[in-house]
Length: 111
Length: 112
Image (cartoon, rainbow over the protein chains, first blue to last red):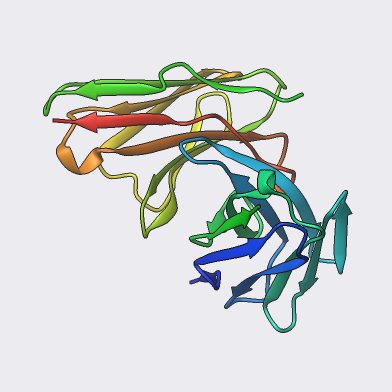
């Protein structure tokens, strides 16, 4: 059974800092991996989708990497801003319609 | 922009009531999902549908049923609400398996 872990559970950084969020998964036979952002009390917003054949994806200040063989993904946020404060979740797909989610990293970017 | 709309944001229901949660997507997506999200447990899949009138159980289907009579609409039904079904319910959709998945804003259900 696939298990997805995100460490740390919470992170606080000063504005302007570059930071890395981690996601690990136990079964490397994945189809793709997605990173999401969730604001308090809201739904999830998709940030990046990496197919299993890809190594990374970039969108603006965000860069996500995928190392399938080691079961790891990272989300890099450059020049963090207070508006980046949210919970970030990763989810892996083993094919079909089944996504397995991590429990997220709660990020706070302080002025 | 893809829009997934959950009709009720906040509901309070009594134990034993039948509860309907409605979800509509406007992008002709084939796949639709219902998740619940609880602190410390993350998101757990209740049911999903890959076509009209087609459905499959997720990880925690007990106590729930679903209906998909039209492609754009996916309903979650709690036949007899119980207090352990108090949670945030999230609807999602995607065009096909492996595509980006889009979520609604969530429905907060409290069962008293």
